[in-house]
Image (tube, rainbow, N blue to C red; front, top):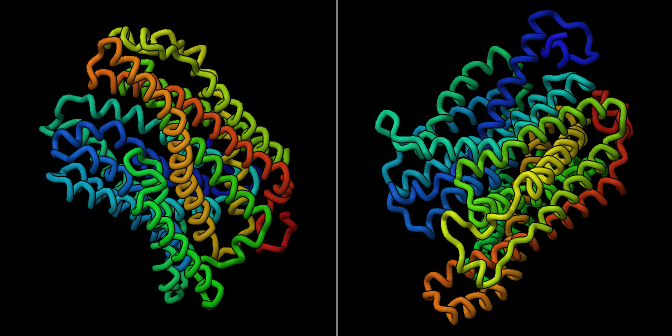
Length: 534
């Protein structure tokens, strides 16, 4: 059986043309999703190089990441609804072209303003393409094994994107100038051919959905988008050491976001054609899926953040070697996604996702046990050739938990993506996908803010004590400050891992308590309410 035939599952016997259509449809959708996801992490490693070449101050460098996250997270609901109204393939193609053009601008950026504008434009393109991609899987692949396998590939691309981004970013930024362009510029330019090729092939392999022009809820779009922007910005700012939860702009942004979303909810309950129909949340199984898909990425994104810093700062790996240290995560999530896509045909999603969350929580507990000597003697002995974590064995202390975490994530993403969008009305597929993506983005921003705060709380006391001890033993204030930060980082990071495990455990509890859909029901299509789904 060919790969494309496998995608068909038990669907009615298709023609050769239809088989090719499904196989290439999945390739295009997966390629676009991988591009969108990895772009969130690929720029992280390039930040020091970008700052040096464009003379961007350290405080403003974070906007290269935050600007993309803001536009992406804030516009996802609008992007999902636009796909429902004006055709998902059309919006998918538009998003890819915008993303490619923005990447071209970023690759040739000559100053800070030009680069930040390109990142915001990339976020817009991603917000249009990503929910449309997920909705296209729902409407292109028949329910049952075919759709389950397609979602497995989609989930693998979504989960592996961060790890692939670290590796690709580390490799590209380390390149000598190619065609006269610095390596960091290629982290942007690599997206241009991918986006344009995918957009040009979409009409050939993807069907267009029915459009409903004229139904766009403009007041809802404005308040919903600005409300999400406020929350994502507030959570991102709260997670930064220089600002935190008590910062005036953090509080103002979060308060404005909450007020605007309250106004948005009021508008949605009154208009005839709302941007976000309340019926999307009315199903208990779907609402549970949305909740868990906010909690789980909150812990997973924070794991990438703290573990990548730990491996570089404490263990002493280079950026590229750090990227390869996460490579097993990509393989593990593919294994977990493939396993769950087969199991979900025979086992209820509750058991697959429930076990997956427990595996991920156990992995984070494992990371919280990382132990590095942080005495003043150990810190004073630190050199480039003798990092603080020189005795940390990657294969014994890090690798097993990366595999456990990634396989668990693969077992969570596939069944919960299926239950989140299953049995949605045809006209709501795009907004349902938009809500799912939004929960992941907002959850990720909130997770980093919470775990960043926890890390700082536990690290600050240790940092102060270490600084005094180091100065008393002859270290200069500058050296003592750097070494004290290094010595306190592990304590803060391990506390953050433990809180991340608690977040995933809460998600696991919600799955076991409320996710009641049966595996037989996932193999059916039909209007919401036609089949009992919990």
